[in-house]
Length: 278
Image (tube, rainbow, N blue to C red; front, side, top):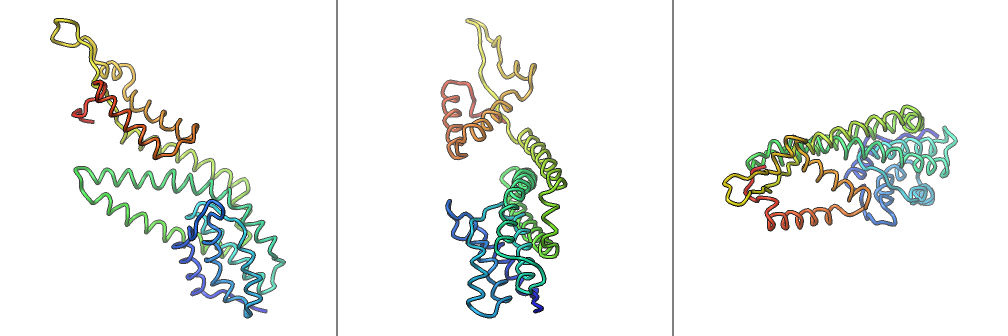
């Protein structure tokens, strides 16, 4: 039986994943329902009876969670496998499909988090913040437009590529080449994060010490830091935040509140100057 997914149905499936990958998101199901929703148009076109459709869609009720943007490739791959199963051209069953997507969740999440969250987004935000100098709205407009264009067309490309390659993409994504890509992207992401932090995080102290009767302070702590280790306080704050987030697993919101408290106390005791230009 020759069954082929139409371009219209593939587009519909992609749009359901693009707009609804976090549908009914919960800690128990994560992206399961978003994934199932994206596969519905595929199943409805490939199978004629409700019984066949119900049996096929049940495959996609298993737990699923990965990086949403790059995760579009998994949806594309399984669409191709579902097409092969419906046509009977390959020996594909529920176990093969679930095994494949379960095996790809981790590697795709690793690559996607490093590439998208750790590299692309910081780069775009760095450019946007530079354009927002003086309160200009151009930075926000730039980020919204460029990010959405990148996400949409990037996700659509890898969705279609996953559909075209089918199971052949698995070896590339989880093999030695995939491991090399993950390590390279992780390193690139760390470099980008470091560059953004060095460019946009600036912490300085106003602390000074003046001898009794003297007009000029004999110690300006910031000048001392600058002569020994320029950017010492900025680096310290970055490492401190990383420690709290990565090692202590404290939520970003709590870390931001802690920084506000530290800044408030620092101003009260004179360690920080609210009028100091950073």
